[in-house]
Amino acid sequence: MKLLARSRSTSPLWLLVGLLLGWHQVYPALAQNAVVHAVLFYSPTCPHCHKVISEDLPPILEQYGEQVQIIGVNTTTQGGQALFQAAIERYNIPPEQQGVPMLIIGDVILIGSVDIPERLPQLIEHHLLQGGVDWPDIPGLAEALGTAQPESTPTSPLPDTPTPPGPTASNPQPATPLANQGLAPAAPTPTDSPSGLVLDSHPTAGLIERLSLDPAGNALAIIVLTSMLISVGGVLAFVWSPTKSPNSEPPSWVIPILCVIGVGVAGYMTYVETAQVSAVCGPVGDCNTVQQSEYARLFGILPLGVLGLVGYTAMLVAWLISRFGGENLAAGASLALLGMSLTGTLFSIYLTFLEPFVIGATCAWCLTSAIIMTALLWLAVFPGRFKLYTLFHREKYSRL
Figure (cartoon, rainbow, N blue to C red):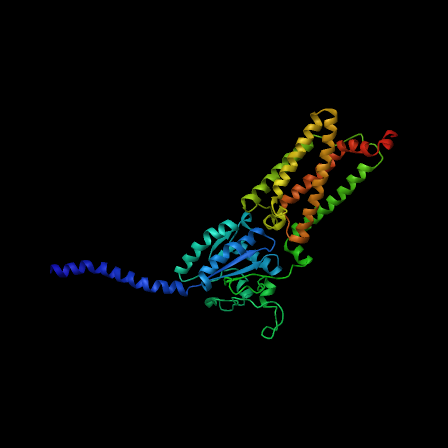
């Protein structure tokens, strides 16, 4: 009786051990046959996207091989932008997080070149142990991938080594259905490169397509750009005109107020660019696409926010010297203020041109800075005109 009782008391323990041993044999097989699918939204002009694609993802894909399949969606194409907006609505992604690179795996959203490499390996392991995970539930993605059976998504929706563009004997139609969705295969990957990542090498979007990516923001940018061009022309005409300065001038105290506001805008842009976080954008524009583009850094090194921060601070110092410095020093500071505001406005014209016509997106913070700089130009032209005119038109000015 004691032996029977002992066997009954220990049987649950042996049962548990048996289950663990059986699971130990079955578990690796389940993980080995599992496939994890994910979608990476990216922009070809985004340096953070380039880092994720070229540095962070290759070792992960090489480690897991065909167990991980990632499709890259180019958000600069019309179809890719439509999928991006569909993902934003499907997962209720807040405006401050609507940037690229964005990777969706299951119901988890990873954003940025820091979040993706840090969390993706753990998520892959988790989903492999759970038997894999299907493509994210993004409206339109199944149609873009050409998968008509969402219940049994193939483990390899596209070849591991995409066929190069161009007609061949085995590929008479190089344009696949995915091309119109921003999902066309990239140029052929080397045979020793990790499989599982398919990117879009869609040709650069046309002008109409780029403008349509952010119609309201780009329209506003064009209006601001036109106003700045007219302002520069008007200021130059006023500076070189042989007429005396008007009796009434705008109040000079507006200049330091605008400089302080400009410092605040440039400071926030500096934070976004250096901390690699998503910007808080308003209802118009796509700040994160602009901030994450290759044009967000001067010569690829200096963040434009830092440049603006230095510029507004220097203009504030020049105004203080022009008001409280000696006569000669004040005149030089007034001339310097005019020169800096003119240079800043010209550079803002260049940046504002890039937004709608090259990047295809507009940054509300950038437009705010451009408007502030243009207003500073008009304010600085009055105290700086006298000094500039006397330097180049002394004889004409003496006869006025």
